[in-house]
Image 1: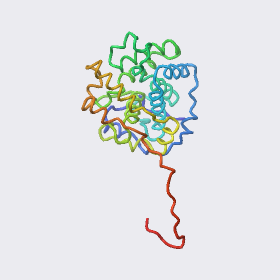
Image 2 (image 1 turned 180 degrees about the vertical axis):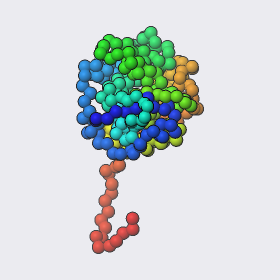
Image 3 (image 1 turned 135 degrees about the vertical axis):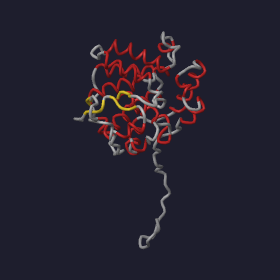
Amino acid sequence: MDKTFDAFVPSTGPALIAISNLTAAYVPFTTLQAIPINSTAHAASFAYAKRLTPPSVFGHLLRCFYFGLAFLYTGFPSNTPGVAQIGFEELATRFFHTTLLHDLGWSTLPEALNHPAHAMTFELHEAIMAYDHLHAVAPELDAHQVGDIAQSIVLHTSGDYWQQGNSSANQILMFLTAFFDVGGYDGLDLEVLNFTGLWNPQTVQEIEAAYPRGNFSDGAAGAFEREFTDKPNCLLSHFPGGLAGLDADLLVGPIVPVKSTNVRRVSRDPHLHYAN
């Protein structure tokens, strides 16, 4: 895609909508899949996340990535006067690492549980793991790139709390896609921002078909409960309604259910006109 996007966007829903051109147009999954993400560093983050996170969580990471790419086709702020721009390839690179590494803190493997940052709220825990990982496998990424990735992971559950200020493009994408995949169209989003204006149901259905949700809701509920039990001062404790609010926001089943193919077929007289 030969296009640039606002590198920094308002953190509040009304201000974000004011500079967006939302259409929720259908973007085929094949189009999103064709975007090249094939560097050595990308492969390393993919392998690291796949090794540390449960399969249902790993699917969540990949769905978030493709939801974010789709949003870039459906009206994400671009060329706002006076705002620095970020190219598609650069944003996709940052977002790939961010999405793949944003739930390392949900890992139950010793490598994560014994990490020196394990006692921190999971967003900080995994951001530090991601920071260390990227410095080891992606020396080509500079302080601005790694900093944006790590900070976006730290703040990916906090996007609904701000009353003013700005987020990086990467950060707002991470927040919105994470909450969309957790709660679906009726889940928590930014004030006055409706997810139906961001993602076309057919695009969503194709992404979910490629990376099914499986038992993601069970895994997420367990991770939420562990966080509240082990770290009463966790960032998620500020979520409206606390643990009960998170559980209520958690979608069970696909965002866009697949229509059943097991339909009883009834023979109708072809010569008659039937009411719809």
